[in-house]
Image (cartoon, rainbow, N blue to C red; front, top):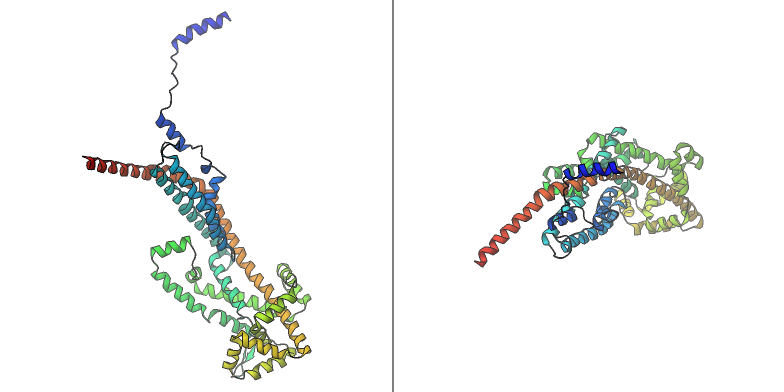
Amino acid sequence: MAQINSTYSIIMPKVQLTPLKQKTKKEEVKEIIQNPNDPLAKYPLRAFGYSNEVGAAVSAMPVWGKAAEAALWVPALMYLGADIYDKYRRGKEGDYTRASAAAAVEQATFQALASVILPTAAVKMGQGVAGYMTKFDGSNLSATAQEELYSKLSKDFDKGKFTRGDFIAEDGQIVKGLDRAINKVINDDYKEQLESTRHYLKQEGIGAKLVRFFGHSSKPVASAKANEADVHWFLSDRVKEIFDLQNLMENGSVEDIQKNTSSKVFKIYEEAAKNLDKNTEALIKENPALILKKILNSQNQEYSQFANEIRTSAPTREHLKTLLSSQKSSASMLEKLMETPESAEVITNFAKNVERTRITLSKYIAQKGMRLGFLKTVGGFIALGCLAVPIDHFVHKYIIKKFVEPGLENVKKIQTKLSFKQTK
């Protein structure tokens, strides 16, 4: 112990201890601003600032995606408003003693860039990269282009463009129903729509491009940009697939359907049997024109009598077109066909088969689009997860510190000079 005390007495006088430096008010404020004890800047509350990006990511999902995107803007806007107001009240001193408009401007700029513009751009780019992967499935079309085409097929199917059967033309040649369906889907109006979209894109300004990039377009932009031959092949191939499945389900036995379809398709077909009586009743009431079209194009001799009655009541092409274009007229015609109990039973069973097939194929087409939307959504989430924090740091360290803060200081100096001159 004596030796230790001796060594301590020799060394310690020669050691110059640096006194602890007290932090200045400016240093304390800087520490508060850079590392705020602020629940709004920390997770999980900070995550509310990205709810609109989550919305942008899921917007790629068919049916409900765009509605979810709009709904998810609500928590994001509430968070952004609360954060900007909090920084205004907190002020430059960081202790809520003096409100600061400059602090609010800085935070508004930060949130606009770090919580809205740049993360949304990252999500859109992530969706684009993921969507590009479908080009390698043999179609040479992006996921967005395929989504547009499946959306069109779904609408065309609902409009009854796949109901056409074989018929004998005036020259005696048999025109196949499949060829008629392909022609109706592709040539009826879609070629003109694609050409119109290409013309629009050539004249589209930068502002419109940005709106389309961050939002959505009602035009088939991806399909218009794709190779026309690829689009034609894709539509023709999918029309043939749907048309063949439709014929199988409407005319084949349950055993044939199970044998000649995938397990996923057959599962949908089985599920379509649920509430079939109620759904068929709704079909007869709401879309009798579809049932008449199906009767006219059926190759089953059991329904030839009904087809002849329809053609007798509408002998010319124009009369038939008028009849089928009006649900009210079609309902009257269908009611006439179902006057006897026997006829009503036959047509009701026919309608059940039509409705079960319609439900099955509508869901099948929707699932195709859903998978593409899911792929793009995953790509958007991956991009957001990888880039959210780097974007925060980039905006804070470079945009705010190097541009916004110096700019606000210059504005403050100019205002001080102007007020000084006015007081002289």
